[in-house]
Image (cartoon, rainbow, N blue to C red; front, side):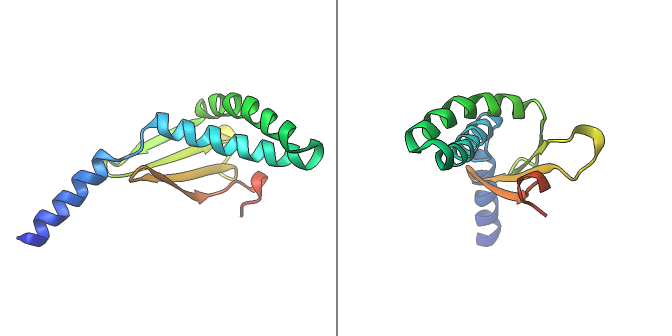
Length: 114
């Protein structure tokens, strides 16, 4: 009985802390900003890269959310950013959202994935 109660408690907590689409958008914005800042920093210096990353990160997140699909499993969610549309699955970027965290499951070939 104790194990059953513990399992139910864990499932309830996972459901409560299942990341929302807004949390995913913030994560995408942060990751896009870091990627742009890193690339621009190699070319023009740290401050320029950080500024460019902040500006383009929000725009990139807004655009990427338009091609993002969420599959909600209540205790976790799978977010798929489909970079090539209905043309195929080669450029899908997948994340598992669980307990307020995001874990990259699949990276598109365009970003160095398999």
